[in-house]
Image 1 (tube, rainbow, N blue to C red):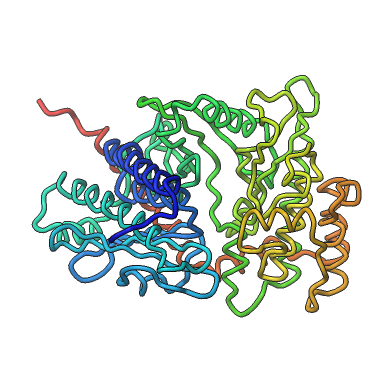
Image 2: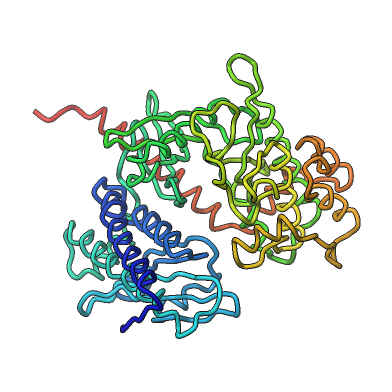
Length: 496
């Protein structure tokens, strides 16, 4: 593909992107494979980090065997029918707001699968520069996958993929500290989350969510400090609607990890957009938000060891970190960029932390924030759950932040006066005009919209996500079987 650039600066920026991708492949992908963490875990990290580097909104990797897909990993906002796009090559316009770039994973005549990324907007000239980066991403990935397959016996690479898929060998077989890894859950900008198992006396153990700091970030002291701040804060947060942190430590290879409660459920974003028979009922929305607000209030009220308020502000709330359990229990998580008084890691003036779609006006312009900033974010989540769309989303992060700061929000025609009254207060531009506390927001919400019971919330989540329920049961059985086998081996006499 012949590329031309508008300026030398654009060409240098493009070349730097290629170099960064090469470093990513070397330091992240190969790290997962070298530590025996499994192919699925490696693909999660690689897909997520590449998507962030090229500013994609979603992405997928699909590996195919001789006849059908054997492993698929997804990230971000992807269509439900993404499988059909895995056979495409090049740029595909999905609609006026999104373009999908797909590159086939292929070496010589071996077709391993495909990788694709969804970027916002339409691109003049077919998006040649973006496509060149996606092709480079694919080229580095297919080499790594073939290297992984070469580590074990097999006939052809595609037959080896078939064997791996049939035998469940995509599952990680590694340990971090005293935790045995079971399967990857997903990857963010700073860490990878995996399901892991810890064992105690007589093989008694439990499944946990293990948050592992990405290896290529461990040499950045400010990010390590932030990760450790999150771990230490997590140990202080105790409430039924907050995810429990059990432990944190450092693995033998130097990587840091946090062991947390595994929420058996889905995040609220999935529940909002997996509509089933229609939008979420008001009682379900109220039930989820009331529980989340009660957890948030407990976090805001947390004190240090001397009994002084921490002045905690989450700063990164979104439907993705509101977990809805299959038992109907709602848990708030991910205090990775939380702000505390007197914390070790400081945010420099002018540096904005958080997700642009869910920022308060004061956060968007890097002014001082307090708990009322989190209440604005909860108002945005409430609006999205009711309407199935985001309140200020313009399709561009910068313009969205400007809209949050400057644009008035009008009442949607289909929104009831009761719901609008709650949105109007929660989404007031001036902090002093919002609810004073998360508890006040929850009490007013409960008064105006009676919340569904946890039993009803859990039933809805199970009905809409049967595959997730099945996967969790499978992981539980796998962990139990591993424990039984380990105990059996431990009881057998050593060979003479």
